[in-house]
Image (tube, rainbow, N blue to C red; front, top):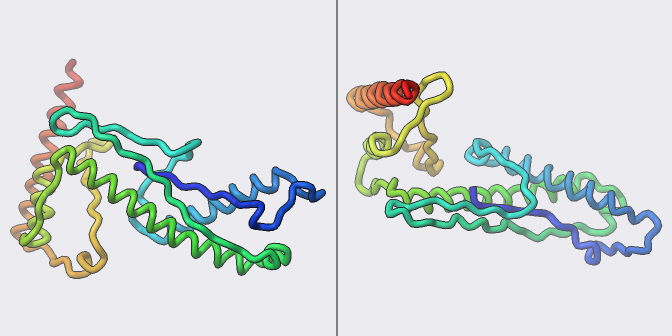
Length: 209
């Protein structure tokens, strides 16, 4: 996913001075690590979609390059996710845990929103570049989903099962999503069986070579 974020503590604004006897750099490093991990973990809990996305630490923002339908390179630019926060000096001196928890909760909300926007933005770029966009305007939701399954490339799991894609819907759209009719369910099952047989045949063919 194209996106990166970081947390930096502005020592000057916090009122710290480099000549304070107990001003140990290791404390700053430990706090930034703890604070960043805490905000990230709470952000993941906030958003079911983000909780499905694997994350890896990197020294900086990394981008990716994909190819579009014409073979041209398309850059997925990694954009930073940033926010500002403040905590009173008195709260820090008192070791006010409640104030810290409220701060983590507030920042996690902004981080979850930023990660979701970055994730969806990357998906839009990839699908448009590769031609995997389906116009669902005016179509019943279930019919649009079936059309998507007929169009996109599916894969196999390690145990030779069909790997189905995840579908992300607006909460209000999901709540109003109708139950597939028996005919629609039959079409979906038929499609799944045909795709599974096709993929297994391809895998066996590759193994022969």
